[in-house]
Structure formats: structure tokens, C-alpha cells
Amino acid sequence: MSRLEAKKPSLCKSEPLTSEKVRATLCVLKGILTSSYGPSGRLKQVHSGLGGCVCTTSQSSALLSNLPVTHPILKILTTSTKNHVSCFSDCGLFTAILCCNLIENVQRTGLTPTTVIKLNQHLLRLCTHYLKSESCGCRIPVDFSSPQTLLCLVRSVVTSKPACMLTREETDHISALVLKAFLLTIPENTKDRLILGKSIIVPLKGHRVLDSTVLPGILIEVSEVQLMKILPIKKSDAFKVALFCSSLSGDLSDTGEGTVVVSSGVCLENAVLEQLLNLGRQLVSDHVDLVMCQKVIHPSLKQFLSMHRVIAIDRVGVALMEPLSKVTGTQPIGSLGSISPSSYGSVKDLCPAKFGFKHFLHLIPNEATICSLLLSNRSDTAWDELKLTCQTALHVLQLTIKEPCVLLGGGCTETHLAAYIRHKTCNEPESILRDNGCTQTELQLLTEAFCRALESVAGSLEHDGGEVLTDMKYGHCWSSQAESPSVVNWPDLLSRCGCGLCNSQEELRWSFLKTTQHPIAPQTCLPHEAIGSSNNLTLDCFTAKLSGLQVAVETANLILDLSYVIEDKN
Image 1 (spheres, rainbow, N blue to C red):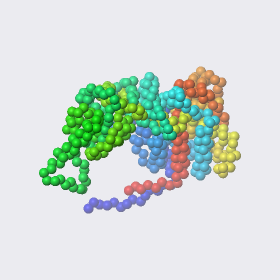
Image 2: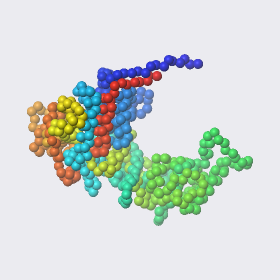
Image 3: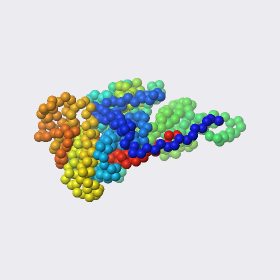
Image 4: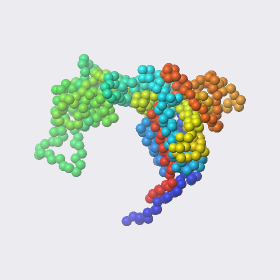
């Protein structure tokens, strides 16, 4: 009998944020995330000492999934961020960095957690109300009759992921393809509800990025030999389709602990094969042109179907079953019995396709909202990052359909919002003090901590030692090159703000982001009509960023309110 160890008592620690070890660990995590932020963020290589693949990335979803976090406080922060990313795909680093900044800044104020939480929630409500209002100076409505704003949004997502290793030409090409793929998923005729289709990403690794393309319908990869057997495909009308989700291999399913009773003299294999051939005869008599199976089709059934000019494709996989059902209008068949005529579907056309060294059967739909995005990149690592980036961009476009507006990117929303909060709390403090039961000093301290946290996120976009500034009219974020002269005419050094909307040739005054900021009432930069025609803007997803702001503040409040951490060490 093995020796049993006595159970260890749980470890209880009070006021966890006062521990130097916890603060240092939080600072390290913040450093990792901050240095990964934005288009010029530094890449990270994450790999396990136990082996496995090496992950090269700067994306929050990949970073947080691969970082081994053990301390409970860090687990709260990373879990909140991962939950946000799983719902919205974008603004993960923004969320985590802002949360770290808030915790760090609030600790310096020395205010009680109760006061901090009440004021943080009030400032969050001010931010949310302003961002949702028509008077918001950093929100732009999206005009779906013009694709320019959507294209800028997609390009902003793609350029923020440096591990994709794209040139400017490749970035523009991928951005246009992603937008085209998204538009193909929108149905032409909608009634009460808009139900979007799906874009399927097809890997084409080891080829030029510019070889990437978008096709309506579905591409099913087949071998060259199999394709030669199918060709030529000739038919004047639509192709009738049957889709099977059960195996047609003839193998018996697992009976578990049950038994199979077989009559004397009956060969089980022959009986199953005969049933498969009967199924094939029904498919032929029903004039089916294409049979697809999620799993394996028995060679004898394949040969039988081929003799009767029926195309048989097996091993299509579970991932393609739902898109295939939508494209063809079929109901997946799960048995070997008689098939209902309503289970069949159709496609407009079938044609062979070749991309690189891969051969495909292209299913062209009648009116389905499914498309295939053939994605190429030079290496496996860059392709994995590009795939994740395209999925994020597609999700961001879907969110923009629900909430048709975007926020200014490049740090301009953060600095503009900080300027608005300072102005609001400076000019209307009475209602805030009355509602939250705090003093004027406490309000000033926490407002400055909150605004500094926002501005620090904007400052995190600069990785090359340059100065980060904000203008005193619009509250936008500006960045200068490193080693700027001490006495400088800023309009000569600054060209455009972070989002690309403001020009330095206007009569503007600037101040360094790290210096004391005087309250200003930030103005709207340009009318919406002028913004819609701009083609070089940096934009952020409204829904994702608003959610990220809320998650960051609420997670920081939760961590700041922790009095004890109890860990079971057994």
C-alpha cells in the first residue's frame, strides 16, 4: 500500500496587492503585453519546456493561451481578457493593458477600495454614455453604401498584427479579400432578420500572399487521381446532391457492452455490403449526381456509384458539414435506410480547380451565402497568424453590422476620452461628489489615475523611443520620432495624428502625454461626410473596444477589492 501524505492546510494571504512579489509579477505581465501592442509591437516566442510547437505572435488570444499563469490575481486578469476575446475577437491587449494600468495607478493614490470602486464605476458610466452619444468626437457612423470605412477597419486589424509579415501591397490585398469575403456572406434578400453566411478559410501554405483569393461556394480538396476520375463534369441543369453524416464504410458501430445477434449462415460483412449497395441503387434511381460523406465510403459503393456516373467524395470532415448543408440545401442523412426525397439538395455547378499543388472540387451554389477564402503565406507560422487575423477581421465586420459605427484608432480614442473625462469632472463635480459621497480631492486623484491609465494605453503604441503627445484642441494622439531636438517646431515633425484624421498644419498646440494635462473640451475633428471619404484612417471596432473598456474597469475593481487569497496547496 502506498504511503499517504497528510493533507496540507490551505494557504491564506491577506491584502495580496501589497505583496512586492505580486506587484512585480503584474509588472512583468504588463511589460509583455505592452511591448506586443500595435502595428510596431514586438513579437513573442512562447514554447513549453515539455516540447511541442513554438508560437510566434503578438496577438492576445495566442499569448494568453500559451502563457503559464499561476497566481490567482493574474488568473483573474487573463481569464477576463480571454473571455472578452472569445466573444469579440479584438481589443484583447487593450483590455489587459488598461486593467494593469488602472490597478497600478489606483494603488499610488492610497484611496480605499470602496471609494475607488464607486468612482471607477461612475467614470466608466461617463465614458460609456459619451461613446454612445451622437456628440461623441471619436465615434464615426458607418455608411454601408460606401466600403471605404469598412476597408479602413479591416486594414487596421491586419496592420496591427506584425507577425503576419505582410508588405503594404500584401496588406491591401488581404484587406480587400477579407471585405469581399464578408460581403459574400450577406444575403441579397432579407426579411425580418439578417442571417449572415460563413467564410471558410482554406489553407494554401508556402505560396505568395498575393496568390490568396476568394471564391463563392465551397472548395473540397481532392487528390489529382480522384479528380481525373470525376472529369469531365458535364450537365446543363443543376446537380442533385446527397450529404451523409454517418459512415458508409460498412463497419459495425461500437455496441458498447451490448451484443449483436446474427442468424446462422448469415455473413455479417456481406449483409452490410448488400445494404450499402441497395442504398447506392436508390441514389442512382433518384438521379443523384453528387454524394458526399463526412466519413468513409466503402470502395465497392464508390465503384458502383462511379459506374453510374455519380460523383462520390468522402472524408469531407465535420467542419464542412454545416456549410455544405447551407450551400446545397440538403439535410444530412444519418442512416442506411430509405432516403426521403426532402433530404436531397442541389448546386448550380461543379467544376475542378487547382491552386498551387492542391486540387479542389468547386461547388458553386445557387444563392447561398457561403464563400471560400484561399489564404496563402510564405511560412506555417506566418500563415497561422494570418488565419487568426482574418478570422478576427471577419468577426469585427459582423459586429459592425450589429452596431454600425467605429472608433478612431491609433490611440486617439483613448486620449480624446481622457480629455473628455477631465473636462467633465472639472466642470461638473457637484453631481459626482453628491452621488458617490466622496471629497473633491478623492475625485481629482482618481480621475487623474483613470485618465493616465487610458493615456498610457495610447503611449504603449510607441516602441521606438519617440515622444507621444496630445493636441489641445481635439485631444488626439500624436507620435514623433526618437531623438527629436529639444527646441522644435512641432508641425515640422508631426504629420498626422494616430488615427490619420488630423493634420499638423492646422493651428494646434501640443503637450507631452506624460506631463500634467489641463482640462480641455475636446472638439470633433471633421464632419462625418469628410471622414467617410478618407482612405487612410486607423479605426477600431466600436463594440469590441467598448466591451474591452468595461471588462478592464470591472476586472480592475474586482482585483482591487480582494482582501484575501486562499489557495489549496494539496
